[in-house]
Image 1 (cartoon, rainbow, N blue to C red):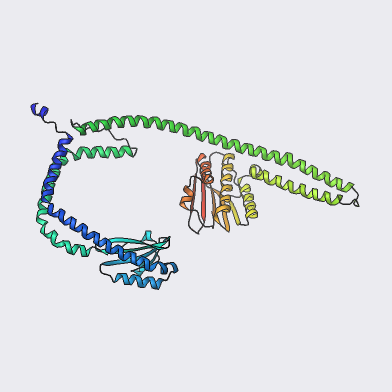
Image 2 (cartoon, rainbow, N blue to C red):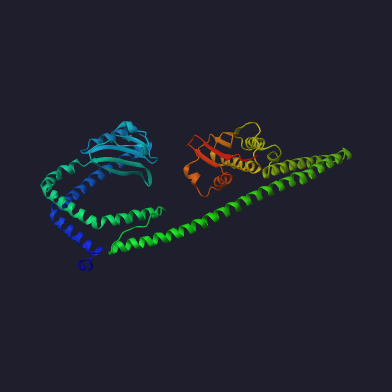
Length: 458
């Protein structure tokens, strides 16, 4: 009890012991420190020589790189390879393509796919190739450490024995100190990492009267509080998410119902009135004498204008809510939309449906049709395509829609752009019905959009 009351080693005492041990090791290893300093000086000199060579090569290759003069670039690379301790040289353009390499098998490859074969220790040095302020690419060369290693080899041999002694002493001291310090700190560190990653570990059981014990106790209190807050926040997020999704679905359905109503009223009310007016004008034209100057021509102009207005009314009504979607089903509506897209944009397109007439639930049909419209709009705006293939088919429990173009291809950054409201809207429409939507593309090889929705009960 007496010793337990007197000896309560705290973290400060442990660190003091560690520092004292490091001082002893530092005294024993002073020769190594001196060697490292010399090595640092030689390394700096090696860097300077290597960077100077890379910078010179960058200046000389600017013109040939701009004009893609590969023979001249090859001569410059061979000349640089003739310098002592140069292991490899390559010239990369600003599109990360290897234009020239000391090993010709790498020429034309992308730098991200470049893997250096094993070789002696070396420095990778790079210099930018510029003309005025324009960046044309980079020169990269590997510079061997051999010169440095030869010069310090003798010094390393002289301190080898001293180093062995220092390592032995350091190992013994580190082992003893790790027993007091490293083990509990490692446990706290690992638990903190799990906590930061969102994985709530079991509470720490570190019984110690020093600062580490106090730290473990504070960690346990923090973990308990975070667990409580996390549960509360997760419940709030789940509740808000459900409410927002329900609201979004309600708004979307209301918009579709309103568009359907407006389309019907425009088609029925305005369309019928214009048709009746056109019939009355035809009757009036037949009643008037043909020799009245300008009257017959004026009536003809009015008839053409009414006909164009009727066509505009039909077009607006179809854009708001295609009658085909309600009267004949999704397949017919998509086929009509494909033909209208080709007529409007001049982009050839083809649509198929297996089976020929697919009639899903109303909300599924509306969602897939709106996604299809948005996909065609994106093709017209961004794809620079000349042809579009679209299809709709069903399995035993899934509706599948696919739209494929032969355009420039969508990029990953475009798909992840938070400002791409059209893409976000397509994902939300499909997700609300328990489905999935995938967009993928390759540069200059087009883009493909695929959507899967569970059929459910029809």
